[in-house]
Image 1 (cartoon, rainbow, N blue to C red):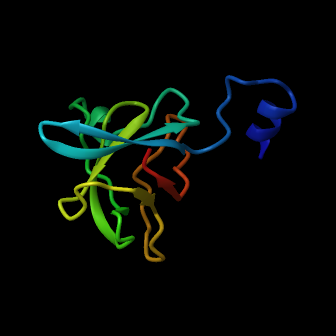
Image 2 (cartoon, one colour):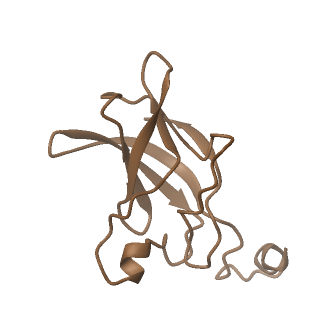
Image 3 (tube, rainbow, N blue to C red):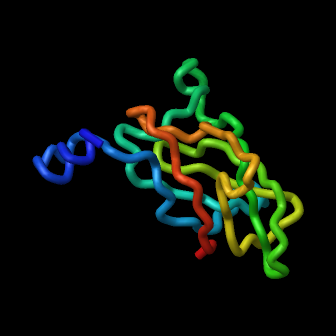
Length: 129
């Protein structure tokens, strides 16, 4: 709460007070694979990919993403860190995703997406636009 007060009341905008929040989900096609690119705000100096901390490239798998298509049936999805601001999500069962969600399962215990300050991302459901 102190970080919220410092940021909002005392104008210390350089201090991040929140975990990453999804702001946009857009279709992305790479190498004939249909992805959903989910972008985040409140990332501080960037989303932390454990692979980058180990000096390898972006691409660590992320748990508890789901996609649904026209029928509205949710399927578990694959997800990886794309860059410091986004992740890529896909499922072989959903070739044309309409919605994406994260940590929406009641058994989800993931802390995979964190910003540079160590705050975890919030659960979300978004339309793919």
